[in-house]
Image 1 (tube, rainbow, N blue to C red):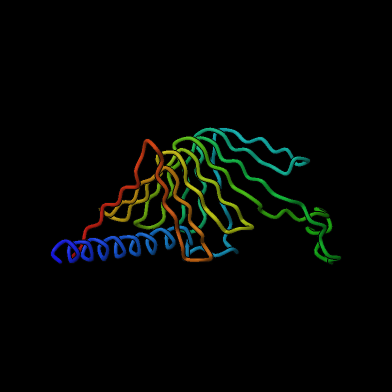
Image 2: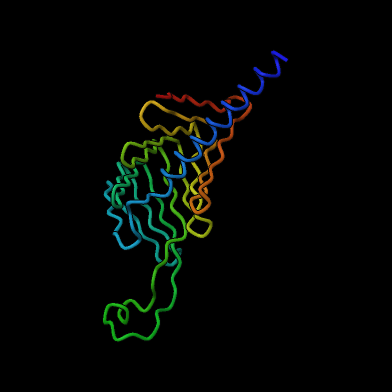
Length: 180
């Protein structure tokens, strides 16, 4: 009976920890204070746009800011699709004839994502607009204050308020949680 009670206590602690980090990570990924109307401001050492391929690549000391969300990386690839615009009296729409819609962002090399007191680091971060999914890979870690979660892959399902942290053969999932 003593071992069963210890098992229940450890199971409860695990569920609490998993719930806490799930809330923390999905809050980090959702970027609640930012709105879709806010512009994304990107700085880098160089930029190459390949309109026919539907991509723009920023290289060297990349800093992308939207509201209170900042992404730093060595390289940021923006993949977009072009859609015909609806007949419009708007001169800008008429001039562009096609509207660009974000499909995917791929940040690589020394990736650091900051939003308020939350910080995430990894070797690569991929945001897929269609699935509203953010995947951090390569020594992926997320902090809020002293609390930390670490794994080989951290997948954040933004619209589902859900996250999954995976380990690998060489790296177990690690969580450090401080309670008041």
